[in-house]
Length: 151
Image (cartoon, rainbow, N blue to C red):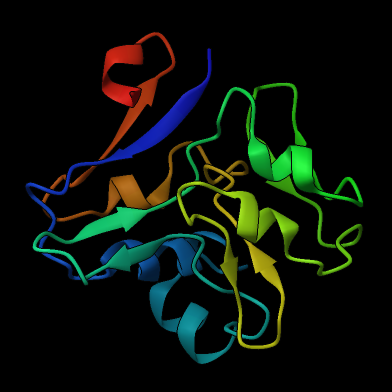
């Protein structure tokens, strides 16, 4: 059963802790201080907080059933794994950014040096750090069977 992270803008306070914990989740140490002081190179948050609205909310990959980013990827760098997660393989990426342009949610991030980053649901961890450490419960991990919540 596919899992997704759903944002709840009505309780998001725009603290950006989801972004911070995303960097920690993808660090070697999994320690917030070490992740930012010593392991920041090549690691970028895969979630962003949108603040240009009357409400703030986290923007992240929806792991679509039929992802437009995957359909537009000319190199096969965007793919679905056996659990249904939409993932990015940086070794196959040719940086054409067609995935960025085709994502209807704006969930694929381009770093300062042009690398692509997108949510992988913390595939190597038991639970997504953005959800686990959100102080306001503005992010929720839901199962695919909850289609009404996902839209």
